[in-house]
Length: 348
Ligand SMILES: NC(=O)c1ccc[n+]([C@@H]2O[C@H](COP(=O)([O-])OP(=O)(O)OC[C@H]3O[C@@H](n4cnc5c(N)ncnc54)[C@H](O)[C@@H]3O)[C@@H](O)[C@H]2O)c1
Image (cartoon, rainbow, N blue to C red; front, side, top):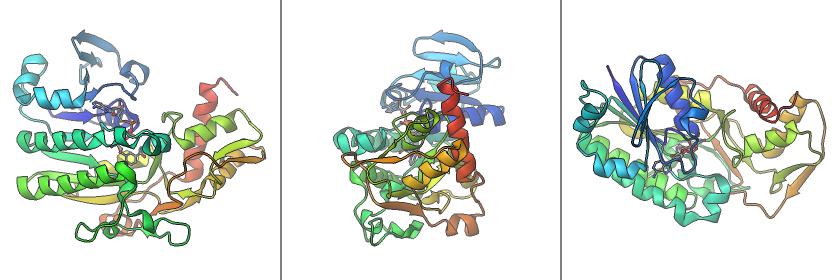
């Protein structure tokens, strides 16, 4: 029996990873979340509840899903002897974790990144304690999610935007990342490299661009815009001018790419996860409206935070060297989000 650990397992990426691991392996998945943002597993897990003991809840007929409702740092500080803890509590044959996915973080979309940067800076504390812990526990493999926000912002301006390639981050010649969020991700990448090189760990870093999906919360732009279009609002509001652009990649592709990359990238280096396609928010609205079949006015909300002008990936390395390409088109993915929003609102 293999045991995997997913921190932030009730957040957007975490819950998609928990479900994927549960549905595609026979392994046991231990996931931790303080539910500060994440949603309780009973709302998204398609597996029966079995038992609850203290902070631990067990799900699934075969009891392969173990949720710990607590701060990840509490776990890292207090459960330094993980084998004993896990063995004593629920898994007598436990020796060590196989794959450790670290998604616990304060993210929160543009409003949090710009509105409360010091709260986001707490990611530095979570990540530092995480990397200290993995170098003691030595799991088989570690996944660290960095972000496209780690890229220098001067490569993402209106006049000078380029498709961002992995080599545009160079620790010997640094640019300025996107606020405390970008700095913490960049620091996390540095710690990942140190963990791989100095502690002989298999570490994979990813830089997802704008991940989106059906079950993302409404503080993120794609579900928020889709919700407005599901209600056929006219005009449809967009933050800023709507000319700012991102590289949207569906969560199923993100999960696929993570699992693919973990078999191939082990030295702590980071790879992009995107489609390599820059789309403005106005183009996204047009796509969603086209699917929905109506043609509203667009109302710009110029007082809202918008971040950098253009952020999109150069996928040459991942597509051509690693051999992975995203498979869900923007139109298909947006259609799925729109359908989910209509269902949530009881429309259609
Ligand atoms: N979603 C994307 O497109 C995207 C893009 C780039 C990078 N990432 C990275 O992937 C990771 C996950 O992102 P997400 O979109 O799922 O965010 P999210 O906010 O949906 O999930 C983070 C989860 O961590 C939990 N959490 C926060 N602090 C915690 C703590 N101290 N202890 C335990 N749990 C805690 C939250 O409750 C939440 O469930 C983050 O590191 C993020 O930077 C995501």
